[in-house]
Length: 171
Image (tube, rainbow, N blue to C red; front, side):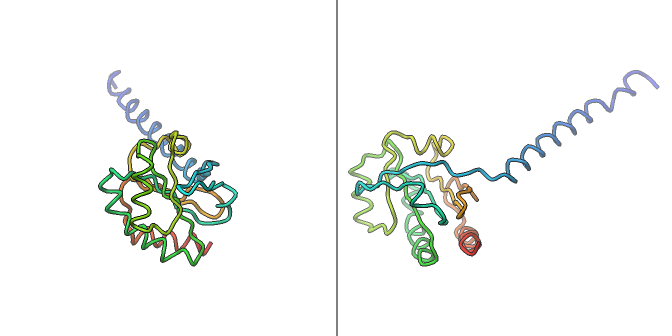
């Protein structure tokens, strides 16, 4: 056997070990779901939305902007989703990004009569706490234990979202 043939297994073995390591890391991170950060949001009405006030509830946190076409397009579906599940205990916090002018956010929320809590991330602290959210819309679904069940970047597939919420609200 030549030296090259006897070493032919080394690169595939290293690749397999790396893939297994990455897989194990992904499994470990998914099996210990991340806790939602303990963020207090400031609503457009001046109320504080504390982690304690959301404790024990299924919560959707939606980072959005009035200048985001996808955010504006998905908002009526978010309203429908909230209205469908609020009676079962769903909480919803729509968090406008820090660069969104507060008067635009307030005008949007009032003219569309958004039925859920609307907050403004004035300093960008909430977006940083949730993993440096930069793309809008980004939506987090958080279970009753405060664990992040799902993170959607872009508009969610609403049928799948509704199934996830039904399961979380039952649990």
